[in-house]
Image (tube, rainbow, N blue to C red; front, top):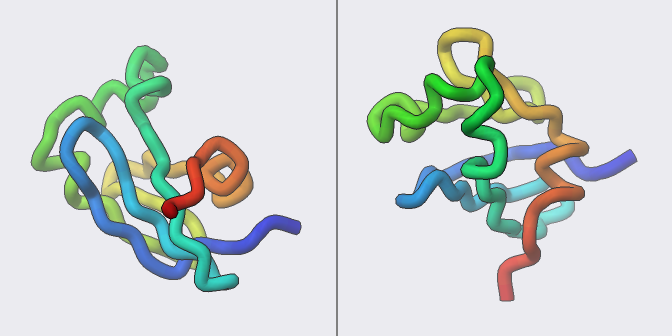
Length: 79
């Protein structure tokens, strides 16, 4: 089982700094997902920045979310 999300900070260019429960920080780039209909709402910068953590998962208010396993496996470790 991969670590779960404990904190998130939205950056420009549809990137997120994600902190996991193993204290690792990683960059998750959402831009690869923006062509999928469910994620198109994240193109709005203000809405994108409303991201929050709910039970270890990245979520937005319209039930848009990313599985923590996907976020961990598809993100880049911060140096």
